[in-house]
Image (cartoon, rainbow, N blue to C red):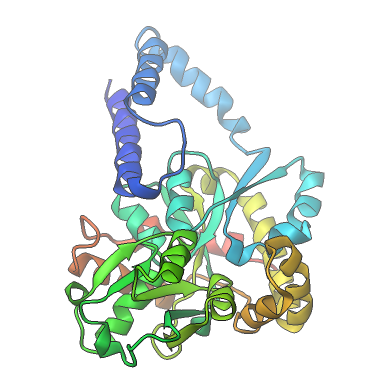
Amino acid sequence: MNWIWQQLETWLSSLKFQFFNRKHHVKLFTGAFGVGVCLSLLLATHIPNSNLAIASSVSNKANDKASVVRFGYQKSAILLKAKGVLEKRLKPEGVSVEWIEFPAGPQLLEAMNVGSVDFGHTGESPPIFAQAAGASLTYIAGIAASPVGSALLVPKDSPIKSISELKGKKIAFQKGSSAHYLLLKILDKAGLKYRDIQPVYLPPADARAAFVRGSINAWVIWDPFYAAAEKDTNARILIDGKNITNQGGYYLASRKFADNNVSTIKAILEEIKKLDDWSNKNKDEVAATLAPVLKIDLDVMKKATQRKTFGVVPIDGKLIAAQQKVADTFYQLKLIPKQINVRSAMLTPAQYAALSPKK
């Protein structure tokens, strides 16, 4: 029975996470009905014959390796999908790739928490919010920082000329995203508190619409949305991320996927590293590949690509400390419900060594 209640607590934690970001949720099979069905299955399967359940669990262990990697991605990092390198690498191993697009990192990790995504990438902030909500995720590797690829924008004719003038203003951004943390650092630099502004939580597409309508005063956003806004909305850069934050993002996986698919994850990281190395040397070709896929003007894509640093960064003590600082910042402002230890979502040094891409 203890096992049953542990599983029920896991599902309830999953639901809690969904409602934590319920305004912009992914439409998945959730809710009390889902929990009820799952609990019924647990009772039917495990109470009558616990020995049979244990035997079944042992016999299925060999089949835990996934034959499909459900890869969550955002438009800001679609090159991996466009190039098709993962499919080529994993096909001989009998593993296929399913690509699932999300508007931002929080939605991606919400899907990962409820079991709809195995692997994906986000900025530094989404894993903090996800872990605080009880999500079972694992940091796999870091992503090189591109601080100039994000910025706080105002309309071209806005009277706002300095950060201090943001006091009392409506600022749009995706809650729990890298833009959220960038805004906190920008405000801190100017001596402003989070309570001094009016946060407007919107995903990129909705924020752009609000920006164009003039219903917000400023917008914090990342490339390629940032570059597109510069061209199409005559946005003015009030400040970008340079010298504000040097945090990159992360590749993450569900804990179950990380535990059972070490060779697959290593292969994925190796292909990402190869593509990143090539991309840093061929940025114009990267832009030419992505412009038609994203339906963005080539000049806009070139601008976004030139601002980006491609690269996989190994997770070490320095990176963990930097991520803990992000978590502490959000907790101190009461933007997450509890204090978290990011290290508890990390692998051991030996496990990271096993996943490390070949040089």
